[in-house]
Image (cartoon, helix red, strand yellow):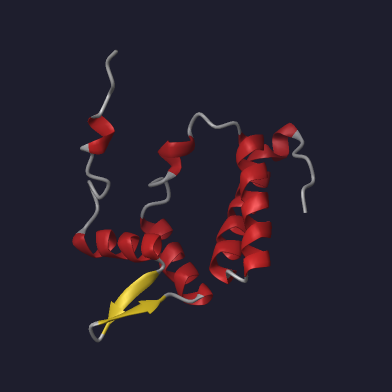
Length: 116
């Protein structure tokens, strides 16, 4: 049995500037450091960080989902938006709703099912 462990050695910030690598880390952590204190990114601030990062790297996370059917991704993000809403996580809800809208646009030629 052989296991491919190359992904454990990949540098996920490869190709990013130091500033963008820091921004990505803050997005992933949902927090930033201000005055030597960890500060949680609120919904609006997190979305601002995300949109800023995506404006420069629109395809950065796309490679993870290249082989996932669009319908499955749509269901996933719809469910995650619902769960984030129920948990009061505004930034998570906004993020997943944005992905739902984007996926609906991609599915439109295929007649996307209407999911609230």
